[in-house]
Structure formats: C-alpha cells, structure tokens
Length: 225
Image 1 (cartoon, helix red, strand yellow):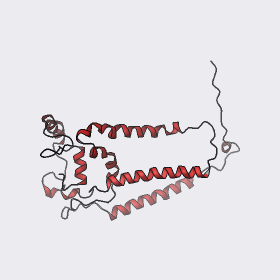
Image 2 (tube, one colour):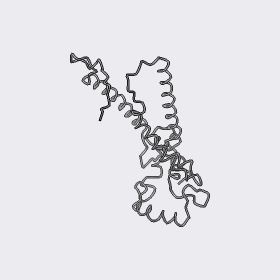
Image 3 (spheres, rainbow, N blue to C red):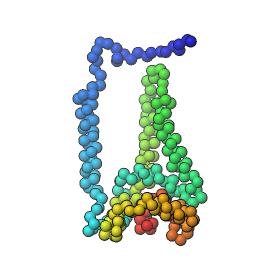
Image 4 (cartoon, one colour):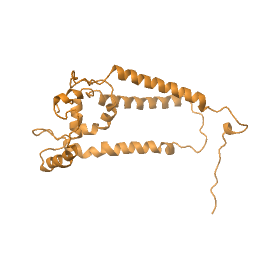
C-alpha cells in the first residue's frame, strides 16, 4: 500500500539557533492580561455599585423599574424571542427558532477551523480586503448588539421585589413549596382538560404560565400577572 506523500511546511521562526525572541508568556503576557482583567472587573464593580437591585423590604421598588438598565437576562431574552412571536397556530414552528437555528449556529462555529483551513501558506492580503473583512465583522457584531439590546431593554429586571417579597404574603419571596407537584400534576391536568392553551390569550384567564407568559410578565409585569 503506497503511502500518501505529505508536504511539511517549514516555519523559519522555529529554526535554530535557540532560544529565539518569541512572544514571552511571562511577564509580558501575564501583566497585560492582568491589567485588562483589572479594568474589566473594576468597571463591573463600579456599575454594580451605581445600579443596585432594590431589595429593601421597607421600600420595595415599583413593578416597572429596571427598564433600559443592562442586565444579564438581556442575552436570554434574545434566545427566547420565538416564544414571544410564535404563539397560537404558529407555535408549531417553535422548534425552528429554539432548537434548529441555535444548533446550526453552534455546528457552524465548530466547523470554522475546518472550513477555513488552508493547506499552503497564505499570501499577504491586500489592505482593502482586510478593511472589507473588518467592516463585515463590525456589521455582524453591531447587529448582534442591537438584537440583544432590542430584546432586553423593555424588561423590568429590577422590579421583581415589588411583589416578590415576604410582605406580600406567604412564600412570595421563595419558590412554591409544591412546584414539582404543580408542574407534573396540576398544570398537566389543565392542559389535558383544555382549559389552558400555551400562548392562547383569547379565552378567559389567558394561557397557563408557559414561556410566552414568562416573557410577557417580564416585559409587562403590571398587565401579565
């Protein structure tokens, strides 16, 4: 069986004599990374101290507080947008937005090293080509930021303690004691009887507390509760 010939590309920077002037991990890279992390964490601490979640039970926040204030939930709102738009008869397409499209994106990201692999040493790229690639990357990054901000800014992320606090009743600040039983038995019974339909708000009482209800509760807590 003939062996397939393999071409080995020589990299001059790895040629002897050693040692050569490589990019040193210590101390240059470590110090640069430390300074960068210090700036990022300092910014997070400053913002967290300026925009605190109001948790004083004697002076609870209003239900609509938190709008336009960046929060970690903003990323999740973008992923959950199919639950907001695909309701009723359109709910059959939920799997496309909640599973297939995210799965395709993850697969493409894993395949990037394979798809962009080059067998030969790449030639130097012209300046205008680099500018075009940088512009395309900037456009995609800007669209991603706009999508995250656009789906997250209406959420009242710091107004939850307005109602979810001990002064509003028993276990208002805690998860229901029988949450598991409710989801396994009671809510399933409601679905089987047809009294509550996912995302269907046409009937009296609206839908049961599905993902669409959760999003509406975050966006409009005084109208959906």
